Length: 81
Image: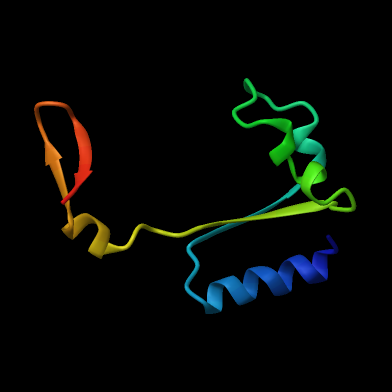
């Protein structure tokens, strides 16, 4: 991804109140620094062989999710009502 495109992407995400965004090379999936946590069929280059970069965005969970959830101390799981 060119620096101009990356800059435009980051500006657009900021204008949309997207709090976290990152761009990574697909080469990072060749040798992950941790045990593989997903099958290779889901790696970017398996889905789209021409891919050179991956865009990752992070959004906070909606408050409505938490208002509909109940934390039970007996099993320490978040359960939906």
